[in-house]
Length: 260
Image (cartoon, rainbow, N blue to C red; front, top):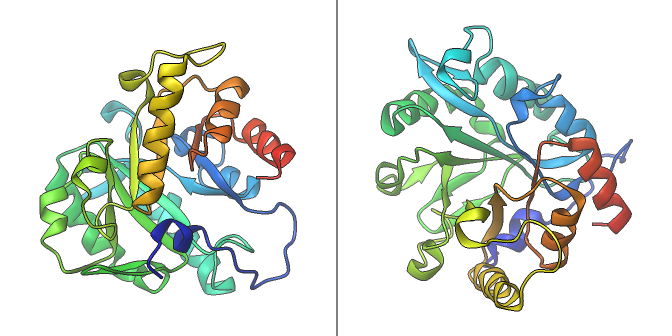
């Protein structure tokens, strides 16, 4: 399929849907800070989940700050192994969802951390989206690297199991979608809005960004926007693809009231 955005969010029902329907516009920011990392977001039907990782003594530990890293809280235990268990049992992660985005935010040095991740995910390739040249073979879990992104290193790999989280300047550079399927950026860097009506000049700017991202077949996300219903409503109505939140149940209720 040529349109990556449509490809990524294509919904197919393989299992009878039990419980919540998938929320294709919901992104669990700093997911590991919730009481049940991964599972709180999955239970709400979120289709995009973000763990932060540090390379510590050869392992990938999940935490927001280096001093909070604990050996027992690693990426494999909290995310990769439970996702693989679901995949092995059901061949998908959430009933009705084509692919779950695992947005891995690298906090330590980019290339060494990725090289460790690359070795670790060898065990999990059967569930992972594959990127080869300009081709994307979507699978149950799509890994995208954010934070300290080893972009040049990854770009040289013809076949890989990860893609790169881009920034707004990438919309002007227009790299291959198979390398940069997602554009994320800091809301506060580009917009001054925090409440009330969005000024017309900023409405026009946001509309231009959304249109350009979608014309290129990319998914769009902002972080550092106020995490409240007023902001969610703005993003929803502006057709920003992923709405960032730390408030899982509240955003889920908002999106279901909007019927996605």
